[in-house]
Image (cartoon, rainbow, N blue to C red; front, side, top):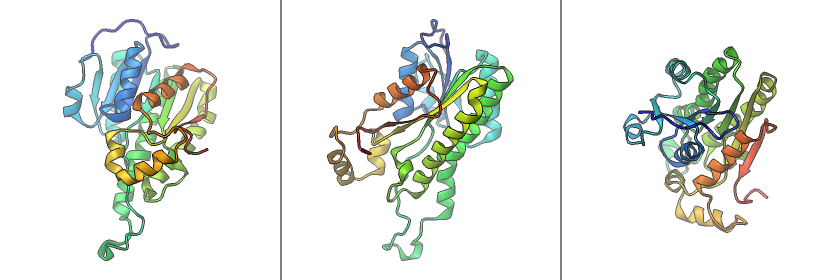
Length: 255
């Protein structure tokens, strides 16, 4: 379902851009933003039904980004069809809010380890799995590239988000580590750390009273917009001297 597109206005001409978790929210905004700038956008998401409803201007791959075997097969397929991968945006993930200790639930007071592992897998392991598969192809083909990881303001720690905060802190650490290792190979690695963005997942994860408190403590007095995150991602791709950057996009909430 991929249509023919014009030459790309990115620095890497006709750039091939893979976005994980690209069906909705931040991912979709990033996909739309890159498509508007004439990139060849491949949307990788586990929601096969939602992928079928995307415009034909996108190339779509249904995949579980926590499955190393399937991810590697997908990456090899994309490289075979497109010739290379220039840009990877790791956006797949879920926002999780639950207390570490729930005194109102004596039968299950502590946050379940099984749930912790599941949420670490989608928010942290997936970044490692997909990046490893893509970077292997970049290195083998000597293709300069750019990796952008979607982190979060919660990487600094946020009450009620043990697994999510831990995962995003891990994403930041991997971003800087890969920037140091891969830069000499012409592969840059950066991250965008959004604050609280007005997406459906944010509203589903946080109560209205909490969101109101966040807005009141944000200097710009509002939630962010998904397009503003996409603009930040694109800026890191455009600037060839940005490497190992964790770019905060939070309206000044952490000032």
